[in-house]
Length: 265
Length: 164
Image 1 (tube, helix red, strand yellow):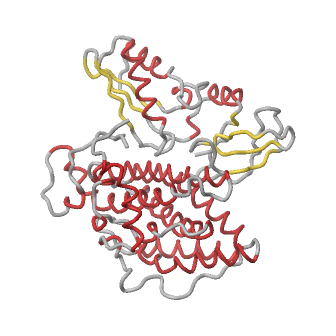
Image 2 (cartoon, chains in turn brown, purple):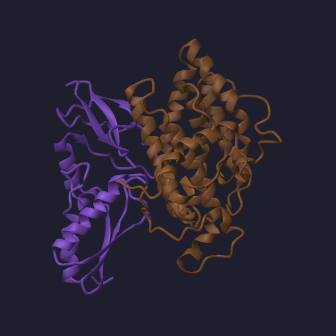
Image 3 (cartoon, one colour):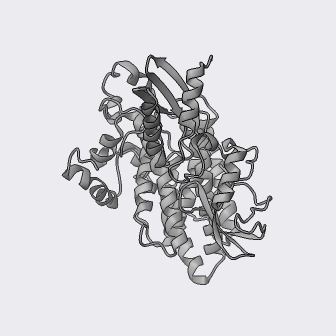
């Protein structure tokens, strides 16, 4: 990645909370660093997961759709991570425990229905969250106002596929239901407070639940029962605790940069 | 802001740079050139806004703008990416829309009051035969900004610059 906004001093946001604010133009960004890191990591990690579909999607149109969504998310990640520090260092040189993404986005792709279930949960959340941020005047507002329009297409894509799979064949119905149920326990974390992120989480949660339930009902699917969070999942990703497969994903994502430091083309 | 004649001329030059992915349309027609000002002798700052946050063409656009301004006697060019206010397809000029159609890309419809996908109220016209009998194949196509459609009359697939 080449920095789009001006590259800043290598002040990893992870240490920004503890370290004194760096001087100069970066100081302005420090207040936004923690939430930008959390949301930037969400976008980066999901982008990478969706990128794993390249060459494996069920049809060519979906190959392009998933790659397009991944590209949008990567663009958002670059802007957000640049608010938190140096985008390349943050993406490629952090250890697993320093990532602040929610655990939902790091979950493996599974089958296509599983990926769509993840997309439905996440893009519904992301659209609502960006919508709230865009209406405020904080440092994340310009990016949120821009990205909310892109994410509306991601959410629409996930909804259309949820309807099609849920109300499709017995096999497709069963698969999307299985994905929705398996991922349900990662959804509670989306509504855990993020330090520095000033949003109305209960309003966000209510709107999310209404939206997701409406889609699932129309798709003849069942809203998963059971806890949407467990003691061990509550906010864990935001605190740097991740699930087993995330380490393997990071290894693949980071190995080129780590093996050839400073390489360009 | 007072714009000098030189700034205006340079802005026209920067605006005449073709879009790297759809070279029939210029950056001015695409509506992504936000501003240009002289910050010193031989020194210019340009503001560019991306169509999509992740649009990979931005870097090529910046390089192309720098080159054309260098060629016209401005040694120091700084292209800044700005996000606010967000770009919308409504920023594409009428001439830009005409050229897109000629190029085989159905231009975007006017966007509604809220962002996001527009309900399919207005028909999207096939850029090849002009039929309004077209169907959506995929919301995502060859670039982030386009959807893939097919004409039911002439059966040709075509790109549609989707509303943003």
